[in-house]
Length: 287
Ligand SMILES: Cc1cc2nc3c(=O)[nH]c(=O)nc-3n(C[C@H](O)[C@H](O)[C@H](O)COP(=O)(O)OP(=O)(O)OC[C@H]3O[C@@H](n4cnc5c(N)ncnc54)[C@H](O)[C@@H]3O)c2cc1C
Image 1 (tube, helix red, strand yellow):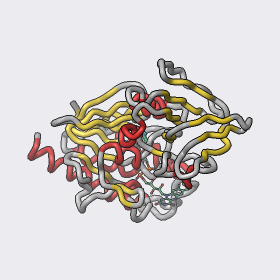
Image 2 (cartoon, protein in one colour):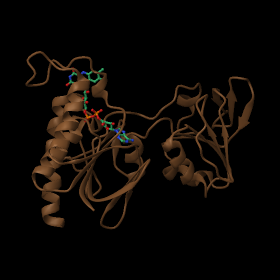
Image 3 (cartoon, helix red, strand yellow):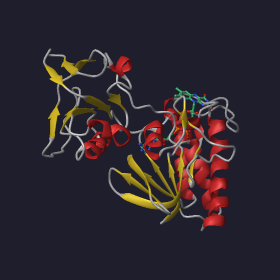
């Protein structure tokens, strides 16, 4: 059992992990592909680099720094976070891990798709969280849009609730996944439509599929999806935290871009430090 699992290997996650490790805590960082930082051509406004530094170099240096300090760092996709009585379980595409606390440092990624009708029907049959909204589709036919590990995790959460689930890969490769009440369609989607709520999917070849609901699980899950599933308070797609980076759930902290405000490296590093220190304090009392 880890003292803390840090989700995200950007400035916020690494900063949090450094403080925890230096206080002798057992720390695991799990990070995936996407960070805003690697897209930054040059960072000129962060302390200590006389000629600036590319976002990618800074990101990789952060991961290396954590590793050099003896922190376990895994490049895997997080697909599920669960709360048990006195611990948390984090599941990735490859394995699962348990911890006493969790720090969410997942950046700003939002799980969405550019398909006509999605914006208009959000909340009226279009959902981003199977575990939150699956209940409304008991014995109904639903679709899951996506083709990766996260789409399969969402499908698994619907399997015992919905009558039939169709995974729509929207032109992408079909996942290797089979279940009795699950179909996979790889055709590209043109539109999602319905009068007052979702009723039909139209594909680019003009064929159609009737459906009662659409679950969007495109690519990997980001902070908003995890926060919703955990029951964290979110405001304007950002995780709400207090001064110490505590969320509304005991033992779960959040820092960096996923808490909103100034979306900059300096703020992510600062909040990461605060989250790390808050975890150390929490473990002093609760360990
Ligand atoms: C083009 C661009 C230019 C920028 N320029 C600047 C600049 O000049 N100066 C500046 O200060 N800031 C700049 N920024 C902003 C800066 O990159 C962010 O503020 C900073 O990276 C936030 O750090 P973070 O740790 O909160 O999130 P991120 O760096 O985004 O890290 C998020 C982490 O979460 C991980 N993650 C997310 N979902 C999953 C999942 N499902 N499973 C596993 N891991 C997951 C990612 O892999 C990543 O490791 C720029 C951003 C962009 C996009």
